[in-house]
Amino acid sequence: MATLELRNVNKTYGAGLPDTLKNIELSIKEGEFLILVGPSGCGKSTLMNCIAGLENITGGAIMIGDQDVSGMSPKDRDIAMVFQSYALYPTMSVRENIEFGLKIRKMNQADIDAEVARVAKLLQIEHLLNRKPGQLSGGQQQRVAMGRALARRPKIYLFDEPLSNLDAKLRVEMRTEMKLMHQRLKTTTVYVTHDQIEAMTLGDKVAVMKDGIIQQFGTPKQIYNDPANLFVASFIGSPPMNFIPLRLQRKDGRLVALLDSSQARCELPMSMNDAGLEDREVILGLRPEQIVLASADAAGLPTIRAEVQVTEPTGPDTLVFVTLNESKVCCRLAPDIAPAVGETLTLQFDPAKVLLFDAKTGERLGVLAPSQSVENMGNVTRLNRN
Image (cartoon, rainbow, N blue to C red; front, side, top):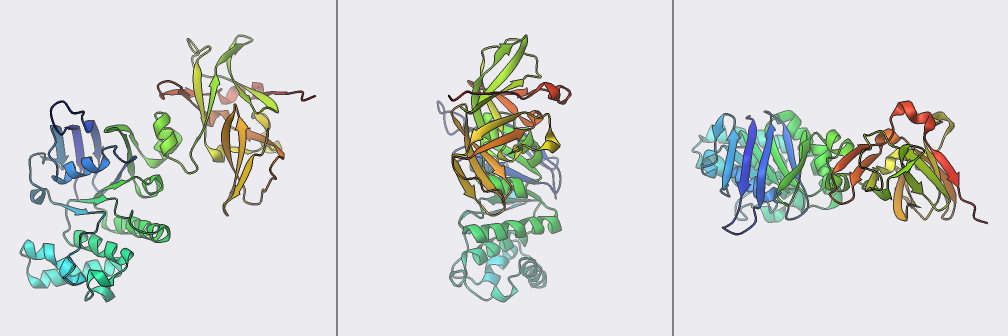
């Protein structure tokens, strides 16, 4: 095992071209599982290739343990990589595919046999050792590709979107197996994916990337609950965070945010320093599971009445869509709640969990009113429809 540290890493493909990677800074401890996540073209696979030595960086340093490996060839970095395409030798058996790298390293046959047996048992592929890759399913081929990497016992494992070719059910199964495998091996791992569910479920640390820049680096819980900007908040979460545009207004000497469902209005007082924020356009962010049906147990929290536009039963919950400030808003309710389209619901949420973002820059501004002011919240005005 080894620590991994990236120090101000940059990558460009030529003079006059924009940087593909820009001032990448991150560090993970021995045995941690790092996820690089982001949309296509964000630079995550390029960064993976730089760590592996398949691409040369144009600035900064890559540290594995206390050694700068930036100028080393891939074979000298003591890493093992699993590719999206599996890259198995079609004429070799499963056993021969796993053995290949060990023979290149000139291990004796007894040690090779022991290592193949260990990996095959770990991945539950003992019965496949004499088959050729063409006789295997996609999930089995993925296990063999992983086995070839595991047999090397490197300092760091690198996985480049290894599950993206699998169907949805098998991807979930393999995701669980990868997590169990990491818990057993406790080897430092870097994993590239565009799937935010994989990022949240697998990683000890997550680096969210966009345009070659790390937008936020932290634990999955930090990324989900405390996103640094609008991009991170929108990319992480399924269903995604609701974003409601509004303009901050001053009323009775205090700054308020106004939600309008066309049936009712809800004024939310601000808790942050409001200097210079009056009349500012902002985006209010609220997770679907944070919007619930109003109840007497949570008296004092702000409420708003809204008409149901669409319902989507998913089994474990029911997604209900309403309109606030002319924007579609998703509420994640209990599975036994099945409101009809056109029905009016009284919804409730905790202002301490509401986030605000600058509408122009996308940067986080803060949260709404503090809990000690909860008795003053939720000043609801019903609109007269007559």
